Image (cartoon, rainbow, N blue to C red; front, side, top):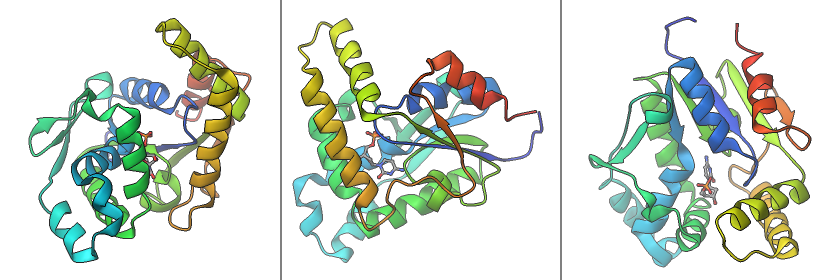
Length: 220
Ligand code: DC
C-alpha cells in the first residue's frame, strides 16, 4: 500500500450502511475516517433553528468560532471541535433535522468544504458523506457510491430498532426514508448524486461483508 496522502470517498443516501463501511475500509487501509455528516450536525446543534434566517456575515462569524481536527486511524479516528471530541450529543433526531437545514446553506457548505480539504492535506482519509466524490474531492482516486432501495434501507433500520427494543413502524420508516431521499436528491446545492467516475455499489442484495469485499477489490 502506498504511503502518500490520498482520499477515498464514500457517499450514498441515509441508511445505506456508509458509516460501518467507511470505518472498516479506513481501518483496513490504516488511514483516518472522516464523518462529514457529524460536521453538519455540529453546526446544526450549535447554530440552532435560527440558522436559516441568519445573514451570511452572521453565519460566517459563527462558523469562525469552530475549529475541526481529525486524529487517529480507522475505528479509532476522532473528530474534534475546538479540541473536544465530538460525542453522542449530536446523534439525536432533533440534531439530524437541524443538520439537514444547515446543510442547505451555501455559506456552511463552502466553509466545511474548505475544512474537509484542509484536513485531507494533513492525513489520508476515507471521507463519508453525500457530496465527497462529486463536490469536495472531485480528483480523489477511489470513489464509491453505495445505494440500496428505500424498502431495503427501511427494513435494515427497522431491524436495528427492534434489536434495541425500540418501537418501530416499518411503513412509516420507509415513507420517511423516501421523503429524505427526495429532499437530498433534489436540493439545488450539492444534491446527493454519484460522481460520474464513482464506483456504484448496489447493496440491496449484499450484507456488510459483501459490500466490504466489493470495495476492497478495487485496491491493489
Ligand atoms: O449522515 P448524517 O445523517 O450524519 O448527516 C447529517 C446531515 O448532513 C444530513 O441531512 C445530510 C447532511 N450531509 C450533507 O449534506 N453533506 C455531507 N457531506 C454529509 C452530510
